[in-house]
Image (cartoon, rainbow, N blue to C red; front, side, top):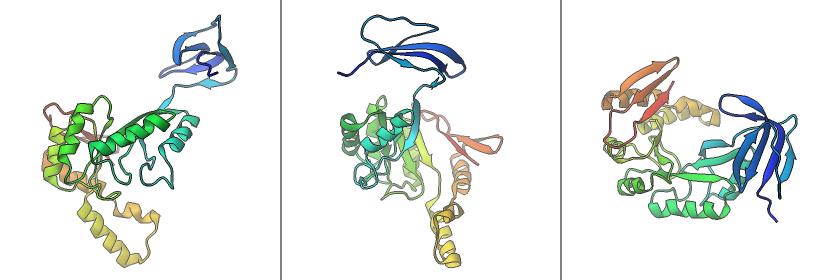
Length: 254
């Protein structure tokens, strides 16, 4: 029978700002008590934590679990299992699947798979293209369940690309969710790719950074959109102006 009550004894408990030594009681899959020495009655499995660390579960906010369509590489079950084995108890998965998560139905399909197979807590990003604005904005109704909207400003899997400035503006103005972006410019990527092919003939994965356009694209966008620019150490970040009821958008780049 599955045991739902555990007592972890004599361990080093790591929190966000300190370490303490003691016991942790888990009842019905929830942390019930933390103390220097906890005694219990009833059906409790004791785990000796001597000379070990007890850490909170980690949250991975960008994963690629390849389901649906690319399951010869991995799937939600296999990667969630690997995540839990490494101490990651929650994940947020990107829309780069086949097909990409461009519609509410396709997004719901991923949630349905995860409900049946995931060993970790889960959420999924809504994907964007130049022609799915209506579907993207419908995600506002699910902002308590969906972790965010993902924009690729340079080509990714399939047609996961938004390089139309009008579409970008409408997403930023209309979305009530967190917006995560790959800030590149498609025109410059293609131009750099052609130049590299002419220079080298055969390209290697290590050539990818040579075609990166993040800095150029963000310089262009920040001027075009009148973003406020701020610099901290080697990073520059742009804060999009107030967008109605949308969360502020912060984009960081070197």
